[in-house]
Image 1: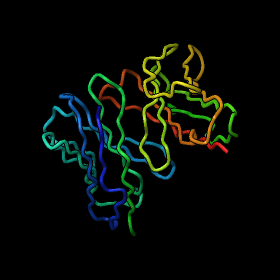
Image 2: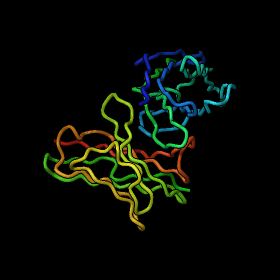
Image 3: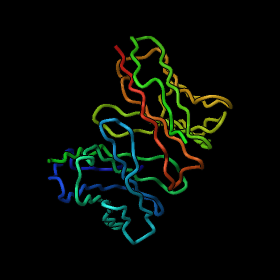
Image 4: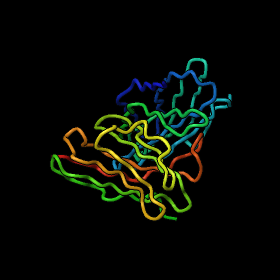
Length: 114
Length: 115
């Protein structure tokens, strides 16, 4: 079974600065996908970024990028030029190829300081 | 195109009562997933349904919990004889195809409080 570890329960970042949220996972699968979801105070789950494990190139979406280290089973999220609206819980979620279940980590609460 | 709709947003029940949570997937989506989020935890998969079929209920407690997705109407997650431990946020997600590597679109959740 997959397990996901987000070792930082809470992080703070100054507005306009950069922050990195860590995620490690354990899987025996060779083909899988990795997601980061954001949950703001409204509790709505919003997809931030997605990475295919077979791709070596790290995914980027505007100010969001990942550092995917497949051998280390690490999938960190970097947020550049942090904005107040980035304040939220962030969940890392692997998903095996050919399945549909997300395995969510326990989350990292990100605070953005003005 | 409206997103995934869930109602009610908040539901309060006393121990022993029944809770019914509804989920209307996005238009054109035929796959529905239910997740439960306990306080300070991530979401945990409960059940995956297609129209009129339960495909995978491996994450759902064997007793008191049931789910359906009828041919017409929303998907329903039903909890009978609720207990305090059922207090949680319940999220529904939908996808147009089997979401292997594809995004699931989440509703706003139903927060269930059991008194």
